[in-house]
Length: 392
Image 1: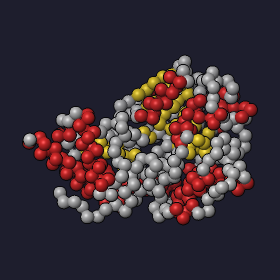
Image 2: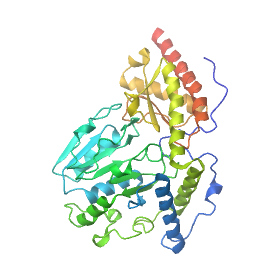
Image 3: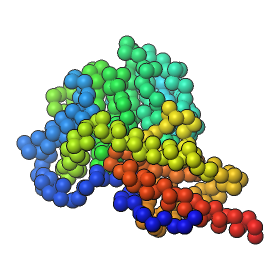
């Protein structure tokens, strides 16, 4: 196969931080509130604006709270676990690196007395029907490192007794989410919005707020100050929306506001979801005709439209050891990196060797279509190399 001529306009396909919105430049940040306190009147107004815009685009229920916290999505999930868990047993579902990490935190660090673990290998989903909603339930909406998502939230009842805590970092703004089924939702704007790293966002239902207030000072473990939202047993008005515990980067806040303004120009949430779906569909057409590549997700209904993970199904590749598979896959991605066509598309370190291409809303479908011939070229180039080695 000859080397393709057309290159991608934007070669950034990293799964985090992700590609900036189309047309972005540093000039979008020229009005950022720099050198000023985030607690000033103007600083609070910017934080309130980013919270209001997120709430509007996501169409959150009116009585849900949303705001910026420290530590990216990881920090937001940890905040939820350290401040909300304890009163009830916990069911945790993990089918990729981060979801399984929440199990480790609950068992090893929080030392919760009753944790029910439901796990699955990369590419698969645990049996969600095993969830007991008299307990608190923790799960990942979309497994960024596996390319596997929950198909829907129909398995969550409206009359649940426990809280539902959802790590939704690579799902929010790209997938249909019924927020009334969730009490805690965490994400970082570095994913689908293409924002800068380090900041997390947490969404709390009234039930979650009540639990946080009731739990204050009742946990059997010390809670870091950066997690303490319900000071003096009350999550006060504005405590999430504009009065953050930590000092946020106002440059990053300005960038998030810019991304949310852009989202409104592409028809808001429906437009963002449509763009992500269009990117996945372009890949689906390619995979259906390919003899060497397949999705890591074992079925279409659980296939992610953001962190799209691929496995190499070619016979010669499958005969390699795991270490050799990793090396071969990296040779493919290195070729694309060298050509300036695709950066950072290696599969996650603990996942099966393959490829992972971010397809969130800030990625143009035209770039996905330009990338596909390059993927075929890079694969054939590496396959020939291994074929020659086999002959030797």
